[in-house]
Image (cartoon, rainbow, N blue to C red; front, side, top):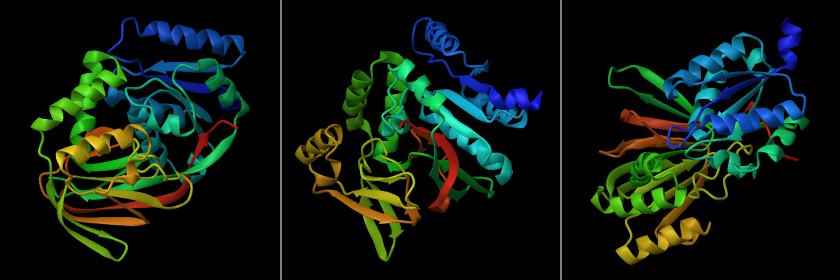
Length: 312
């Protein structure tokens, strides 16, 4: 049985809750899988909290190819499950994605597009594996317990974390990525615009008011566009509070992948960021709001720890 399971894909389908008849998307994926004569077992998540339980079940049942039909948050849950497994077991598993989320930034890094299901499945069949890095945030929770959480894409601290949270909520309302981001931008005027921070990045100590910080192992939703998820480094963008006209310019540069050209953006490359203070700032990880850490926390990098299936 184990040999048979090893050859089968374990597929976790995370349906979008904001679209009509989400099963139609799965039916399309299933049709292509059957046309390619791919042996697979599929489970479906009931909600975001069930993803980790189902991925853990697949790992423990011997699946060596696990494909997430979902977005950045589902991938985040999957890699955190893999990191709980013994190293030998983890290294025997390859993780793939068919984009189906509110945000699919990590898939887009590899030019895996949501609408190109056939091309994506053909890529997965070729089983080209690339070991990728994971960022890791280590912090203390409100109970005084030491915690950590891994990420594929980025950690945001401050305004962009608030906007990402708004964007996720408005995407469920509007469906469209563009409309949701536009509406989130309009709601931004009601958000706190700057936060007192104390950051240590390499030999620099940044102690001042900051609008937002992005710490990316990958592109960080456009804020760390030069980040590479396999070079053992984190890219960091620290954004000071610009004037209103500069803020609008900043969002234009974000949309056009020229974010680092903005005069208020200060980029760094490092292996660790120490956040000694980030008063009242929300923190998001791979696009999902997390419980804000208590006190200081660190963000570091672990090199080439996950097998990820990528295009040629």
